[in-house]
Structures are given as structure tokens and as C-alpha cells.
Length: 174
Image 1 (cartoon, helix red, strand yellow):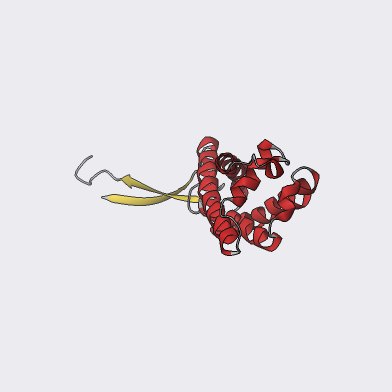
Image 2 (cartoon, helix red, strand yellow):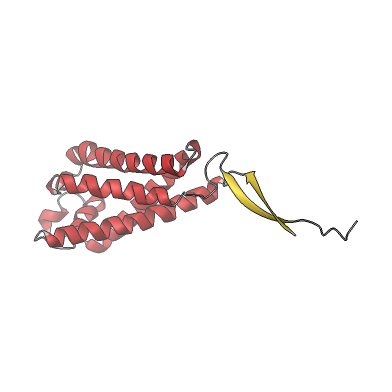
């Protein structure tokens, strides 16, 4: 006979960080794809967002000098997406339900926008001032929301019930 039992087990930190990195990369790929589509649909070059991201490591002058590189932009974006996912993973145990995780993820996306575009961009990365700001808010909200889905029913939250299947000994055994 098989019995279903709910136990409360928190996912180990390393597993949660990995979940955050993978969730961040997947959400980041959607983010990049949608941003490239938006650039193309508004008459720009589809690789322009990746070229802009490459200036994070190549320097702000890379756009004017023609040395921005979409491949570097992909690598930077994937690494940052993984890092942002891992940071979010540290906060996940504080949330009790999938709804609070989704809300926190969405707010986290907005926070990423605020820090990246309203704090860092004016100080260090001036090329990002050229981005469509309302669309960037939307894209960051989507990133955070998609990232949160990586933690739905994962056992990553403190006290979250995790379904465990156990075999009971048959009644014929003593």
C-alpha cells in the first residue's frame, strides 16, 4: 500500500541558488528575445539591445566607436540574469505562497529596472538612456514574474509542504 504524506522540508541553499540561476537565465532569454523583437518592430536593429548590453563591459564609448558586440551582450545578459535569479532565490524562503512569490518576483523586476535604469544608467551607462523606458519597465516586470515561476511548488520556501510518497509495510508482515 502507498501512503501520501506531507512533510515540511526546505530546499538546500545550493539547489535553490541553482534553481534561481536557471530560472533567471530562462527569464532573461525571454526578456532578450522580446526586447530584440521590440527593437525590430519599432524600426531599429534587432541586435541593438545586445549591443547596448555589451557596453557594460566594453565601455560606454563602444557604441560610438562601433566596437559594441552582440555576442558579448548575450554573455553579459545571461550572466546577469543568472546572478539576478540567484539573488532572488535568497529571498524566496520568506514567502509562504505561490502568489506571494509571484508578487515578490514582479516587484523584484521593477526594483531591477529602478536600479539599472534610474541609478546606474545615469551614473555609468549613459547609452541606456536611449532605451524605450516604458517598454523597459514592462520587460523587467515580465522578467521578475517569469523568474518567480521557477519557485512555484519547489520546496524552496520555508515551511512549504512537500509531497512525499512512502510505502507502508503490507499487513501480512509482522
